[in-house]
Image 1 (cartoon, helix red, strand yellow):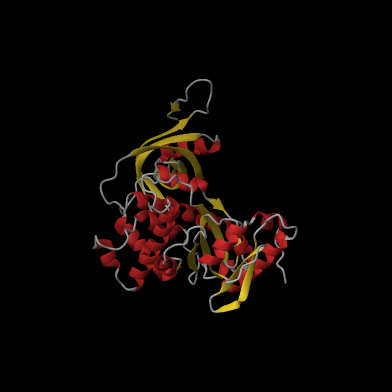
Image 2 (image 1 turned 60 degrees about the horizontal axis):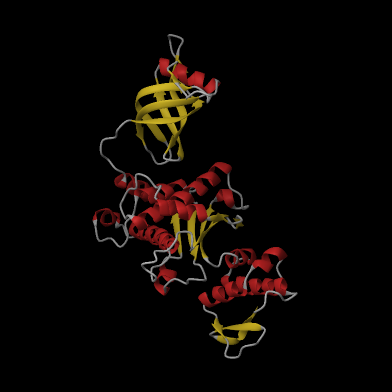
Length: 388
């Protein structure tokens, strides 16, 4: 039966996209060809064929693409909707992040975890892109021009059912190629490959009890960064038996070498992997002296307690901006600073704080606070800080 797929999307699939997709997956051109169709067959059975229309102007072109989508889905063991999504992104690598846990049996995921999954996917791609440019164990900032160009060009495809899956289409042409090196792989392909290779290498080292060599051997095949570990930890399922699966569907327009396609197209991380990854993350994080810095943000939550002198002090949660990211940060405040936090929360008003930010795996803490002031709302005059 022909799958129920949007006719408008089927009409947007090009004949070249179907040909490249099928050829990249082992189909071959049949010895005999037609003037109206490109005939592709399986190498093990020439009678099993795909008839790809040459002219998208045929009146029944969307129906023929629907038939081809169904046949390709049967061979791939995937849904026609997933195949159609790949055909529409023939010049993009597609990264799929799938969470498998007791929470996802019906194809849903708690909103907070879904946000963590998206943020982890974003950070993992940025970490890989930065490592392509500079393979070090920690990137203080992931705001490199090429990395940002790549991320801005990515598109979030329709959420796929089956556990809970998000798919990122990463266009091969997101970052302009270097005209001096016509044979170099596109930056996008190098970044997606680095992400898959480094994650697979990380899992392999854990399973072989070889994490010490991963941390100490300068000749390890691929440099693992603390940023990648942080991204993976953000996507960790909140379930003792949960797992995270990352898969790459390589752009049919540029099939990868066979060794990459075989070894780096899929990797699975279980809870025992995440335990080790957290330890590796702590080893790779910079351990030098931390310097105080100034941050702007808002007071998100008040958790202080009332003391004997009838004043509140204790922990508050702040949302602070750092290098284009919003961090959720805890701070332990004395009575005077806690009173300022209450005023900022009630107003609400922006705050300016200065202190030493200790980055954690899922939570962060601001210590040694030197400054905590409210910032007046914008007006015709420049904003001023008021220390009340």
